[in-house]
Length: 349
Image 1 (tube, rainbow, N blue to C red):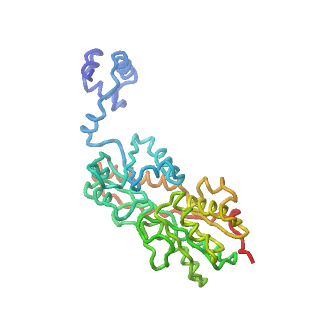
Image 2 (cartoon, rainbow, N blue to C red):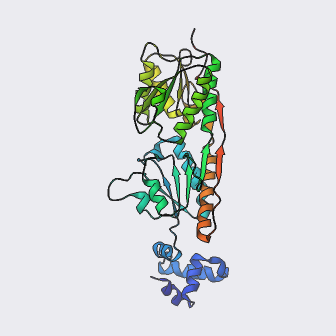
């Protein structure tokens, strides 16, 4: 079944049938209705998407480049909220989402081999070759939670300001023994000195800088635990290193709410009361923050706004690429806000 079959059946040209599917504004409503009815009667579902893509030179899909595991997109509340906002923003454009791992092992390298019209690079390991492949393909790109680059639009949140407010809150409550619970793909891991911290990405760097802004000003040297991932089990390992010791901190600053949840679990295992004996502060203000008990003091970032801004910047870059216009890179920096709940209090006497 082809366009010509429908054209012969209705008694119109092949182009007229094509317009009924792809350019409906070129036909009268009555003629288009007659063509679509004939197509349904004959079992024709529409032009082949692959052929249409070849003819237009587009795929109708945009990539979102994530970490080495796509599971992150379905298990992390912040990531799912971000992706949902993007999907909603892209809905009217007809563009589909394609999730790509930044992994470059094996015969298939997604950033090199998957057909897309542009890509969002979201919180990726800066040492990954995925970004290099996207550059070489000359695709329209937008960076999210990445270090800004002059020629590429970027969308970030004010991580440093938010982290600074969180640390200052603990200092103002009277805490002097403060632990940082961090994560990262690359070593070193375990209990480390501040000078040993290896930073894997933009958000990690900015949050550490914000914490140290406030702690350095107060003359406080934090105890730092760094683990190889941000999942619950890794968070529990790091939290135990900080809490199962005689000189344990009286407060923890955690890279995310998910990491803070692991810390709360370890505190409960060790019989440490929160917030009476230990204060815990997260980051993100994910749905988890109000579901756990005690409700988590954290730093709010607007995930929905970040997703909408990222999608808008990418659709603009793709449109500019199609028309040959030079894209003026956007620089979006969204605010953060400290949200005080029940998990932080003055230290025990």
